[in-house]
Length: 143
Image (spheres, rainbow, N blue to C red):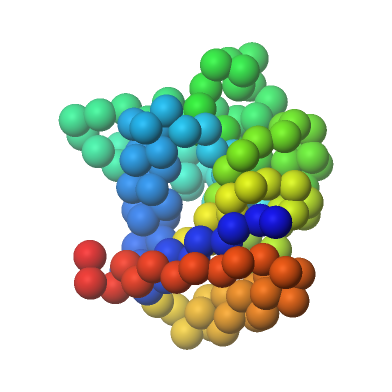
């Protein structure tokens, strides 16, 4: 069953996602990122280039020729997510549960401080629990 990790209370959701992805890349853990909202994948891509001035987080789009050798891959649509193939970790930056989330061992959700975003995230928590997932929470508001 999929383990779900909710990182909530982030002052800057994209910066928090970049920090988590940077940590995963440093540990040589591959992560597929689902970023389906308009412009979100491009924003994440730009942020990963500039997030930490002293290091580089190797990343690319799932359909890039370099995808096979790149640990962090970004899927900007459900179709791109479906073609990415099986992975252990999925980070969902979308407002809805990612399609096929149950095929991943670990699902990472990053939630900001916006009231509406938090409400929608609580609905995803309920959905994941009803799906039988183990859900864990990590508060980023103090970081």
